[in-house]
Length: 215
Ligand SMILES: [Zn+2]
Image (cartoon, rainbow, N blue to C red; front, side):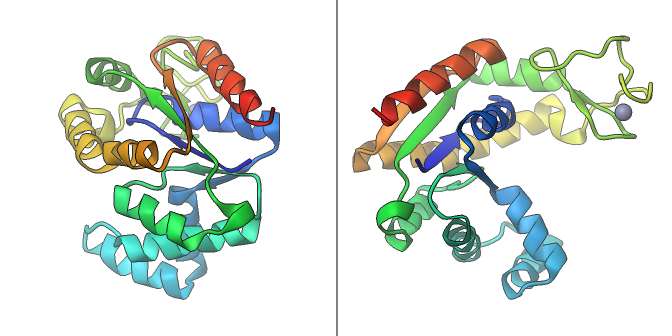
């Protein structure tokens, strides 16, 4: 199966992606990871993307789509898209670029209310030494405020400050929420799952949907 997982920042997409990959052997195609790999490898697309990023601009859809389609063709059937498509135009262009076995089959939306996202992300802390992420949802430190592996004092990422989270949510509603409307119109199979529940409850909702696809 070929899946798209989407939802606002702080919806727990990363955790659910890991579980899906483990359980169903999907190839995890994260747009952020793929972009980094292309830039580090200095590919033509990577170099192009880097120019925009260095200027603090968004990487244009055209480049992102080429990169992701390339990754999908390379991985073949049975992939999970994470962080892409991020706009309805990307979703449309993706559909136009993929055929048969490689087409998107189903979309999983993790839904979380804005207030909940702000609350969740503003309590998130990261270890400056090993980059491990702690939050109330998936991992709480054994000793409050300190990393379990190295004892370092946990810090808040600048991205997780309430004002920045509000900006990220605005961008999500403006640019990414229309992706869901796009897929609703195309009639692809879709599950909207309450992402405010705990990790295991969300995961069982996701699994129930995925298993309903293969029947
Ligand atoms: Zn650490």
